[in-house]
Amino acid sequence: MTFSLLGRCARTGQFGAAVTTSSIAVGTRVPFLAAGVGGMLTQHRTDPRLGPRGLDLLRSGCSAQETIAALVASTPHHRWRQLAAMDAAGGTAHFDGERVKPERGVAHGRDVVAIGNILSSPRVAEAMAEAFLAASDEALTERLLRALEAGEAAGGEHGDVTSACLLVVHRECFPYVDLRVDKDPHPLPALRRLWAEYAPLADGFVQRAIDPEDAPII
Image 1 (cartoon, rainbow, N blue to C red):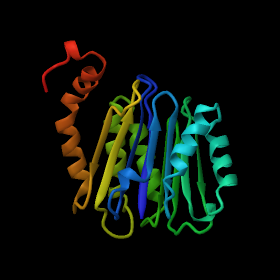
Image 2: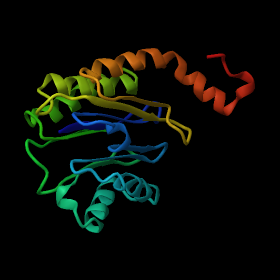
Image 3: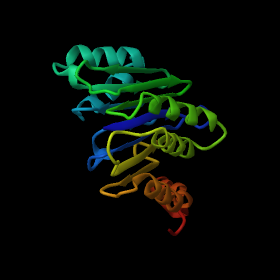
């Protein structure tokens, strides 16, 4: 009942994730990112512990493929898990456990991987990756939002989505963007509205952290 993606901007070095689902608080459970390291998605019968574990493996020098393989090998309930990873070079990998409910979907492209479960069609993941790749001249946040919107337009999941998250990291240990919508009948338009409001403030919030003397008043 979830579709999501990881993306990388080769120009800026940003990593991002976007996700939506029918259950509450998806932003706390599915996407995990670290600046300069990469990202993880963990969903279906979700085990959020796999996100930080995956990031630790990526930090240690494992590729995305090696990270997924190590997680699957060390996770006793892996047949229930759907996972994706992206490493610092933009390499991607995924895993679908045998108990992950259909329709499942996955699509890989340059600097992107999209996954989903309990979808209306496997085409959902493909549409997300295609939308991300087609917007290569846009900022990473815009590419991620367009990908989620394309997934929903391609049929989305079985049932209505009610929560969504947009997460991006850049140079700092804290997120550049971390926006979440919960219990909303139309979470993707709501997420886009939040980003439109937050976008002109994002650099200022970073500046407040690294150079408060020169930071703008927000």
